[in-house]
Image 1: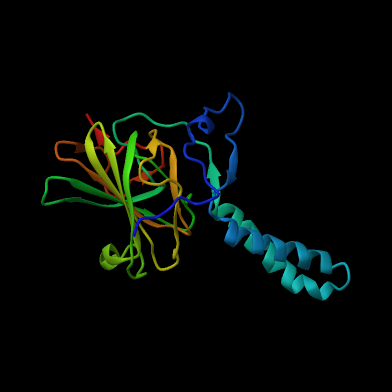
Image 2 (image 1 turned 60 degrees about the vertical axis):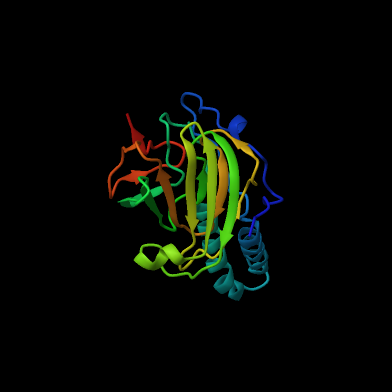
Length: 230
């Protein structure tokens, strides 16, 4: 089933990806698509904190609500990135879970995203999004071998290397994948293209003849870490 872009998103983020100036930290914003989770939590924290002025008993609700709000800020952070170099860069923050040769000559690089990672995914190559397809499925933990059958969104990009497939896979906690762009959209390498709420897994299929430049267990940074090598 084709998916429409989120109403809270823009088509491209290249203008927002400027390098941070010397001596200054990169700007960090809240990920688009996080509003349904973050706003109610923040509102609850604000209300219960205000009520503690009337009665200290409200602290029993205010303290965990504020802690949850802080957690949401961390979970849905969306830092600016200085985009790395290479033909294929990582679409996700996380750890390389597996590298598998596919029967058609492609190589699948699976990146596991924990709840502590940034959840925004980025375009691995510049090109045109040719399809964005939602596939219904289960919600087993993303590190489980059966997670290939989980709820997922399958992306295809028309690039200088040909058709590139990328798959966002939901896990036991992440029950919602939010695409930022639709089929027909031109993207630059490193553009934000979607969000998996609370982590899970992102698979990138390197075409035949492209050598893998990462190894199992290696940490990756979306938009920065190169997945291939010369």
